[in-house]
Amino acid sequence: MRSLVAQARRPLRRLLQPTFGSAYVVVVGGFGRYSWPATVAVLCPAAGVLLIAWRGDLNQPAASRKLDPIGAIAWASVFVALAIWELTELLLQPSLRTDSYAHPTISVLTDPVLATHLGRSIVLSLWLALGWFLVQR
Image (cartoon, rainbow, N blue to C red):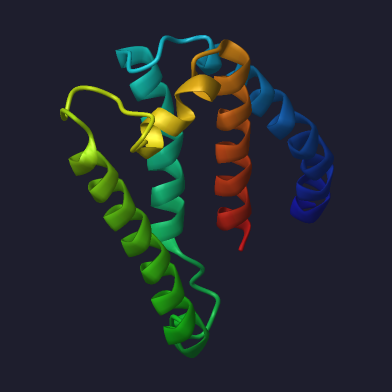
């Protein structure tokens, strides 16, 4: 009987997830940048996904849950390279509080996209999709 109920819920879940995701993106995309409502609205799903990820899949054997060293080094290299580039561009600006298009930081490059409701909604959609993809892996 439980399996029948679970099977009946799957199509409903597949329908509701994009609906809630779309509503979330439209509402949160309308919040002002760097505002408290936007910060809380981004932290809540991020914390939820983090809790799911920390819980992990207990059905897998321990040997299959180990990190691939080559993949870990590759991702660490990407993050370190981005951090070095960001810090270099920040320090080459005329002032730490003045944006420079000659030495743009990541926030300067994303400002035109994130300045509009549509742009913030698209970036939130991509962020949610990436998070969902990572949770499913």
